[in-house]
Amino acid sequence: MNPSMNDIVQIIPAPADLCVSYHGYLSNPVVCLALVAVDDGFGTMTRDVVPLVVTDLGIDFALDDTAFNRLEWSVRKPCKCSTPTP
Image (cartoon, rainbow, N blue to C red; front, top):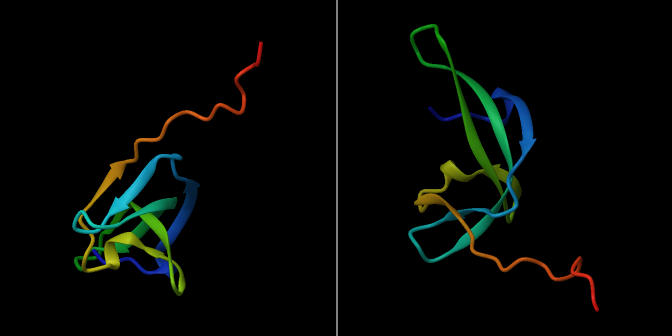
């Protein structure tokens, strides 16, 4: 299934810590998740949720990059900006 931007049914925000790994050497944050509906070739519409990332050309499907490896959760320490000071 290779969706295009025309196949997007709905876009939702991605979790803050969700990233895309490209063969383990690069990690880009996922900006949003897209619900897509694509014809499976047999006349049936298949729905799937796919990640979208920022590229040099704009926003694109993460799965379209040939170096795509996996989705992963980044490890970030919690922000201390809301911690009350004594």
